[in-house]
Image 1: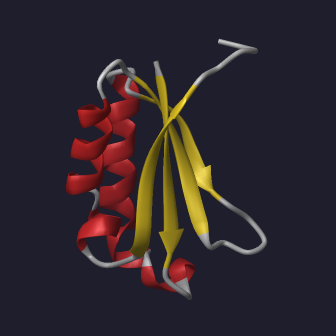
Image 2: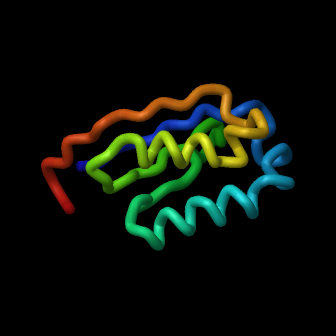
Length: 91
């Protein structure tokens, strides 16, 4: 099963994320090494949100990631949502 985690960011995210970026990337990197996060990244032009692709059978894995994410904890994410994703092409 796959889940997409969508983030909407505050204005000026590039400047405002600096104090929290290392911890955010560490959390994402650890989840990637466990095979939970398959890919992730911010939108470009404008940088107003991000998407992370999770490979897990349990949406609570994604919810736990959100609860621990320094971007969420520190108010850089204005809205987040989790959507199950039915992949029909690719792996």
